Structure formats: C-alpha cells, structure tokens
Image: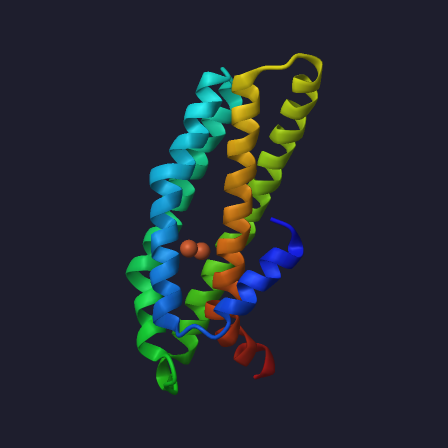
Length: 169
Ligand SMILES: [Fe+2]
Ligand SMILES: [Fe+2]
C-alpha cells in the first residue's frame, strides 16, 4: 500500500473509540489466520519452496501466540480503561503495551526476511516465468502490506498512548 493510502487509512481510524478499533483488529487476526497465512503456506508449497514453507509455519505459530495474548489479555484491559485514569494499573498497562510493541519489532524482522525471499523469487521469475511463483509473490506482498497496517494501528492508537506517559515520567 502506498504511504499516502496508509496514512489516510490511519487518519480515519484515529477518531475511532478503542472498542471499535479492537473489533476491527480481532477480525483482522481472523483474516490472517484463516486466509492470509494458509494462502501463503499453500502458495509456498505449490511453488515447492521448502525453506519458505517452513518459515511461514514458524510465522504462523508466532502470530497465533501474539494474537491470543492481545485478544485475551491486552485488548480487554485497554477497552475497559478507555477514558479512565489507570491508577494502580499504570505500570501493568505499560508493561503489556511494551511487550506487544516488542513482539511487533520481531514481526517486522520476519517481514524483512519475507521481503528477501520475495526479491529472490522475483529474480528467478524474471529468468523463467512461473505461475506458482507469481502467486507466491502476490501472497507475500499482500500479507506484508496487511501486517504493516495492522501493526501501525495497534502501535499508534492502542499502545503508544500508554508508552508516552512512560517517556514523560
Ligand atoms: Fe494484532
Ligand atoms: Fe499486535
């Protein structure tokens, strides 16, 4: 997604209440797990790309764990705390948000690795055109764009507000 589209999308969401953001994000998790990741796995298998098939499996496990923590622990607390003084929960909230943000940094590293796979595929496709290779490139590209948007929404609107207070303290 071009940067200005991403910015426009984020701008629209900046006024959403936390509960609406969370609903959107949970639905997005479902799309990643039920559609995006299986599609990527399937394309990697069809293109007989062993290392990438393996890597997507690892990524699947990593994201499953992260999404679960967000949905079961972090999001419900953030929804219940909107417009409230966190009081004695301040530190726990900061810790949770920092933890989620550092998971995102790990996801970003993995997305860079996927981009490297994608470049490598692009080069081999230029030499010898293959439909399964093109499908794989498209699925990698789509997944990365969606993941960057997803993480930007969480970082900017859910986690940063709690981490800012920490920086100012
Ligand atoms: Fe998420
Ligand atoms: Fe996340």
